[in-house]
Length: 165
Image (cartoon, rainbow, N blue to C red; front, top):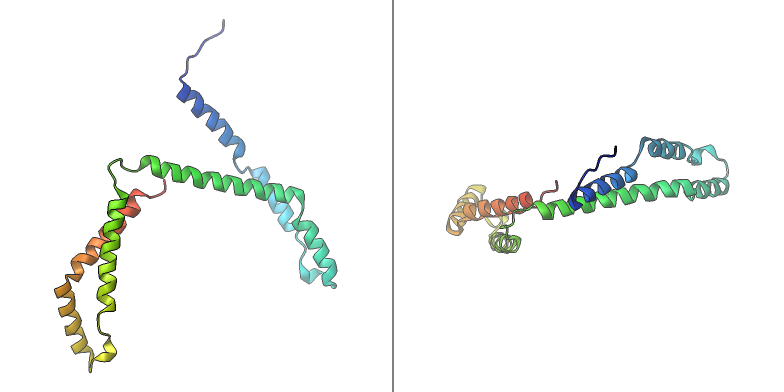
């Protein structure tokens, strides 16, 4: 007697993706084939004539099996990157407003950059103590530490919410 199993469309989609993913993985066989091909690379030191080496190198480099393996490896890497990005987009908090955070971060960074560009340098002072007291006064007037902490917080929040999974 046959058994009937009901599955949802979502379950079927998962199963198909899993099967396709298994077929696209870089296998041990692929790795050993690639290492065999790479180990047969012609070395210039083994040749007396560079023209002979160039022709051997070109035939090795253009080997169709090597090209297929490299292409497969690139495609797998590109697919993994695409999957990581889609996971980032799917898993970020729904209430996260990246434009707001990025705008505020840019504004605070701009303020900090302006602070440093309008600050005198050490060579304009007679000694380091005068420069240190000048810098401390400028920082307290500008509220530098608070702005730097805010910039750090915003950057971490942006990074955290867009971290690859």
